[in-house]
Image 1 (cartoon, one colour):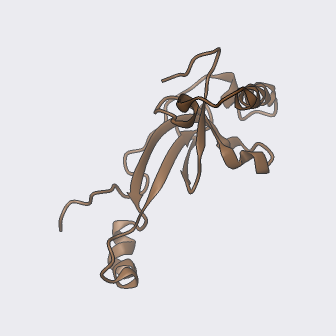
Image 2: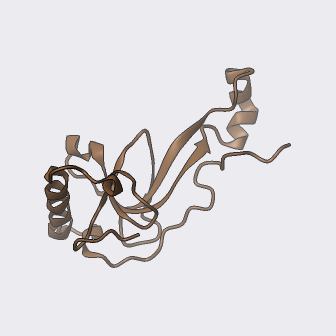
Length: 142
């Protein structure tokens, strides 16, 4: 079997232990709220910068659809990886996906991995999304 061009979902993705106050998942959400307020200020500044629209691995990021939700924990965090991944795992592709798609190329999707909390396990996989990089204390993390 030829080597896939895209990795399977979550292949090799790991978070790191973090202590930044805005990643707290405790009941006291004031550091997280302050970070959202800083983002709102940056977003409303005259002319969004290209840097804000093109987050890099290591940047503090916020997912744009959070504006339609109540600031859930998973929409703010550090970008671990952004890549294309196969839509189906190898197993799912071999057991039905191949027949479903016929002769069409194997489908893939744009995926973002974001660490939203202090523990290395606090990693979420996003698809069908858009992120902004947030400058902290006037500078981007990456």
